[in-house]
Length: 397
Image 1 (cartoon, one colour):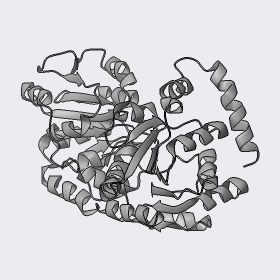
Image 2 (spheres, helix red, strand yellow):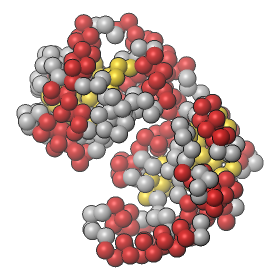
Image 3 (tube, helix red, strand yellow):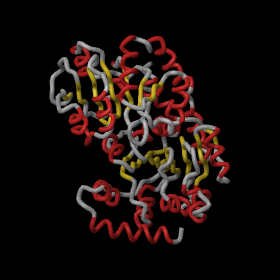
């Protein structure tokens, strides 16, 4: 930890001068107006989430904690624009980008935020922020952590960084016994608190469907295939599969990639933002916050990301009773292994496998599994109450 603060400060100051106007650093710097605001007063819980998925996991925990402790207020930070943009007006907490992990920024941030409790959802932990919390003696808790291997900041290769993290973090809340074993092998005590993703998914049952999409559904002459959190790679593979029996609804993971999804289908598609409901072979839906509702309208579901780094959240579809398909990179998500074993998720290595899945869905092969899928998610929920109690214990409430 001796060189890291010096290097990050030097890099930050240099990058701030030369960063392009549309870079991540420029965006974070321009959006963070907290430097011109008065510091928070009273009891503050600060929750950090890398992106939207982590926020949705942490949201019921934060809201449950605030409901049980109304004299506390909340602050939420994001690393990614895909989390910050759709939730920057979140009504239960003040929302900001996470300040750059440079000592000068961290000091100013902690003076402004003035947290009495810091919560990190899953994995996005930064050394200078952790060191600052440790110096300020702020109770710090990590929730929903999945640790298939030892995190770099707990590695013996970085003894000073490791010492700071072990000293600062009061509770390492991991998902299951396998994660606890990984942490134990690194010499770090952790607590199995479960996976808040199940609680988030369970809260989506009976999600209201926007009227616009009910009208789009009524206009279709074919069954609907919803491709959620789609990347360009997913669209390219799907375009090669036999999907003509379906009306394909594409929901981008990143709205900036919407045009790339369109190009995979040669631009011959409708757009939910510009077109009136009509029968269509392909519908592009470049809108935030609608995917969970669209899954309820689907006759078949493909969850994107699996032909890239990793499949995105499958549980949003599963809790709606859908047996989904995904790409080949699905094993890094612990719950996916159980879903595959139960026959509730169908991985595909190529477009031929997706064709097979679509044919089975068209025949109605998965209808009998709808109740099983929904109940499987509900049976695994309940971690949030334990996590709220853990936060209260951390600050002796």
